[in-house]
Length: 157
Image 1 (cartoon, rainbow, N blue to C red):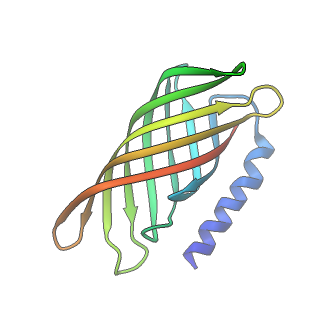
Image 2: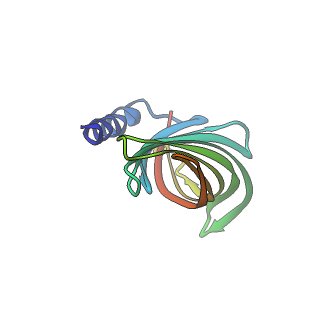
Image 3: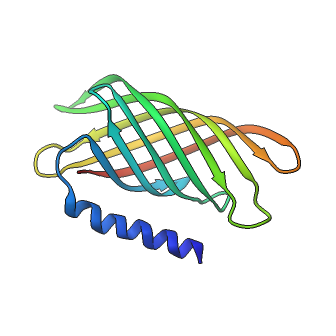
């Protein structure tokens, strides 16, 4: 039931967000990868971005909520197109959907490559890799290496 609800929310976001899309510093859209759901970003200034993702973790079967801050470290020119390279830090919470799952927190380092379509198509495409340390709380404390990755298409509005 909860998977269906999350799928409906993600599909509604896909349909509604492009309707209001225009060029601005805020963007939201679809995230697919280890976390499938809705991603969003806000460009604080030309080099700093804040954002997050809310979605279903395909490996643990939990809801994952993350927030992050990124800093642009480079621009790569590929055939007159610019790809931004961003790095930063973030945090995530894993929320269990059943009594057999456990609550967890993660501290993540992030690397992102993003491309912004300009002109008539206000879309940002990005690939994000997120290695970090995950902590689980079930009758004690456990820590382990975690790795998340996502491909996102975000509409600027």
